[in-house]
Length: 107
View 1 (cartoon, rainbow, N blue to C red):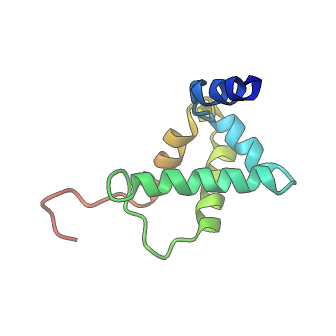
View 2 (view 1 turned 45 degrees about the horizontal axis):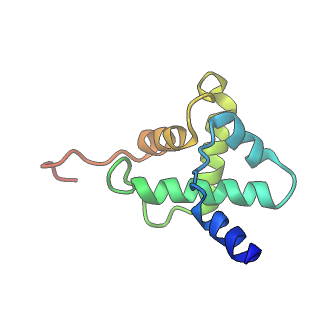
View 3 (view 1 turned 60 degrees about the horizontal axis):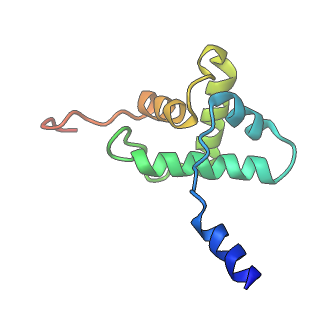
């Protein structure tokens, strides 16, 4: 019976998403291990996928490594903005590089 209560308690806890700021994201990108850089790259890819066609219009042949390098360079060169959340910073990089055409205009 104790185990059922424990399992129920685990399932009933509130889920909380962790949002990273630019300082944390850059730290993860510069880490010499495998987990943190991989996690950061996955985060960058997720934000990229969510904003595609809405915030930015990145080409279909852009690579994960290319995105990773772009974000890392931006965070390195813009320390005054690192307090912002990672998603905002990633979208800034992508929008500045690959803005979408305004609606109603031809490419």
